[in-house]
Image 1 (cartoon, helix red, strand yellow):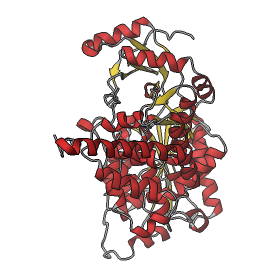
Image 2: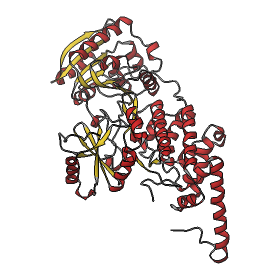
Image 3: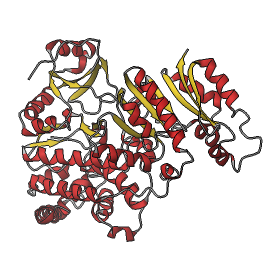
Image 4: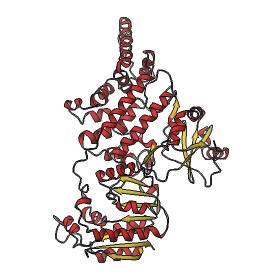
Length: 477
Length: 53
């Protein structure tokens, strides 16, 4: 293995990596470093010697990892003198961190299946995965990547699947919630960093639901055993070992969980924008004009990160990807984002990361000290934002004043391509239905242009053929 | 040795109960040892098998 070169910039502690005391993560330049305890180092040696490590690294499903140089370990020890770190690893740094409450159903499902395949592969080689959390999975575009190499440990004889409960709370229950109830899991995961407990999840169902696949075992029985053994400590684990529990039972449980997860399908109900592409009011010529402008801006120079805000089925994300290392394609409609993800996955795309985000209510900072998981904008700002067919939704549907929308776009720091449909636009008219006649007095092309010009330099504007929509390419002042 | 997350006592028992034939044997032994312990201890300290904090 090749030793990592010296860090270019000083290291900073990753605030979300504190839970397991056998490792700690530090960020430095384009690498991620992992400090390991003596025990963590021995577990790493076992992992590094396994076929699993080689196979999953080769397929890109395990983050690329190599031992870090002594200088990195020295830096870590200087930064965290009390840590008692025995070694350090160096990982590739994925371009954008996302969280399960921003993923679609199929993304969480694919992440769950990766987690389960890793547990199976680990068991076959005398290893185990000590936890089961989707926060250990990140994305290379549409490919899930398991990033927590510190999760692998040497298996202990007679030990059950310790991560099973966590698997249920953060993977299985959210998937079942959508598959069996048609309820979006994203707000639930965002609301609780540890997921949904068996007892809470059981309370959402009636006895009749026990007949649905997986429910009796993973939900009903699980919740009732959890209640019954609530005040029993770790003696259960010792008892299981004495009673002859072995890893074949774990392997069978993991297999059956994978079979269940594989069969689940999203049931998002009728979503407003799911049929948008079929029913939208654009004329083909208008779409072509928009594409041409976007392609021109995208082609001006290569960018690292582009955001497509209100991406819908990803038409413009794909154009942006022609001139960007990574495009974050964001929409609040989980059904359309899921369709986009599945399409990208089938193409093995690595340049577009689709995420479910409501821009009027974007991801907050959650977890310990509000620093374990950070806000969307804290994770990397775009050099270019596409903001097409979005402003009227924020401003008219969600009542965000135009001035605020423009201020927010300016705060993103990059260039924008933004579209404004004026009040006479049929879509705006539809959104205004049911509101007072004098609603949204600020919503006009004049106000928008005035706000835009006060914060940006408008390089180009283009009135579309309908005469009700204008596109602007604007650069921050 | 313990892990860094709480595996949940009920969640562990479930793995034996729902673990097919092998799991059922483990669950059987587990409960049999509990019954034996309960009977043996039942003569002297009736509550000793239910530790309370």
